[in-house]
View 1: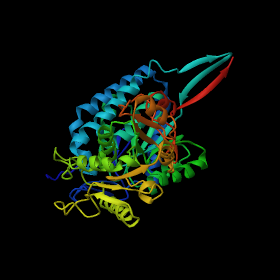
View 2 (view 1 turned 180 degrees about the vertical axis):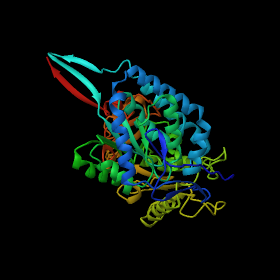
View 3 (view 1 turned 90 degrees about the vertical axis):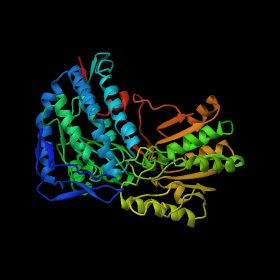
View 4 (view 1 turned 180 degrees about the horizontal axis):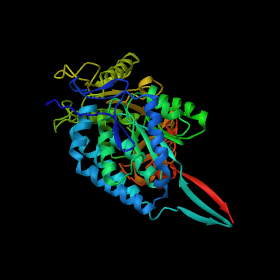
Amino acid sequence: MTPSTYAVTGHWIGGQTVAGSAGTLPVVNPATGEVVAETPAGTADDVDSAVAAARAAFPAWAATTVRHRADVLRRLGAGLAARAEEIARAITAEMGSPIGMSRTAQVAFPAAVVESVAGLADDFTWTEEIGNSLIVREPIGVVGAITPWNFPLQQIVSKLAPALLAGNTMVFKPSENAPLTARVLAEAAAEAGVPAGVFNVVYGTGATVGEAITAHPDVDMISFTGSTRAGQRISAVAAATVKRVAVELGGKGATIILDDADLPAAVERGLMMAFSNGGQVCGAWPRMLVPASRQDEAVALAVEAVEQYTVGDPTDEATRIGPMASEAHRQKVVGYIERGIADGARLVFGGPERPEDLPNGAYVKPTIFADVDPASAIAQEEIFGPVLTIIPYADEDEAVAIANGTPYGLTSGVFGEPEHALAVARRLRVGQVDVNGGHWNPLAPFGGYKQSGNGREFGRMGLEEFLETKSIQR
């Protein structure tokens, strides 16, 4: 593995680099333990400067035409595509996503989101008449965006694109664990024609920078993706200024395999949705629900399939599971595996030990449990790692009850005869359900029920999150 160093020389405020004044934070490659970059440890004063820049830039940007803003977004998408390999390698270095995944989901998906949002410009209902009222949809103002480390570019682009199209300005705090693409995005935005002050980046921790953005009286909206615990804190802090809050939080999705499903295809897809990005996906399906009479068959298929999930150097094209994003996160995932064993779940693959050929780095063996109690910790809590729990069920009603029986409600998948699977999908208390492996649609809304969050991203509903509605009576 070739060491790489990425330079981040300062915050991006008002269209220029602004040096930090409070020390730096290291960015550690989880595969090697090497420090690959340092970013400024931002302060509340840095947030004040960024918010002032965003506030000053707002009137002129909001006054531009929607068509102009859409054109800027398309240029931004092209700029990101031109730097795709640079972005992919940075993401692999900062959080361990396998390079193949970085090139596709980590880079290609954000480009698709930018294009899909730009395409909304002409067809969206910006104004309409209801009786004697003119209904006008206007930008909210200054948006504070805070994102996690697992999809560092995707998560911010999913917020920035609709926010800019709506006419807002933004102050962005990337995760301190995966901040490298934030500078690339800022440079690409400037090159695309985003004016100075419209998009600002302040690096730092959630406790300092995140809190300052959330509490700031001149920030009109917070858009956050991350853990449920952090989302609860953000909601509480933002309440003091009664700003709008959209939060996309944790998940504990289920693969529900019905008795009339193609079992091998369903297990293969469910395993992929459990282990993609090392299981570090809020929309993952870490629970697999199977008819009790077919559990042994499903376990055998899952064990056979997981042998193909090569764990190793994330820069190797053959790797399917890289390291966890940090050593601290590796220890958390291992703790859950140990908890599963202690609670009596049947370990059928993997375990808490390090992979034999990887004594260093934040690596975890892909792990599969069977005969899992649906009330146990490994079936209820978000592990965020390559751990699949196979849960047998007696009948369809029990399967639905188990699937709905966690505090989360983000995603799930159902496999079976199409109409049968669709009927079960309608019973699930989640924001997105794939039936028989339905493909991702960047125009469809994404978000959760229950403790998986409030609000929606992508498509028309994602754009509406960043707009105020005014009624003018005539």
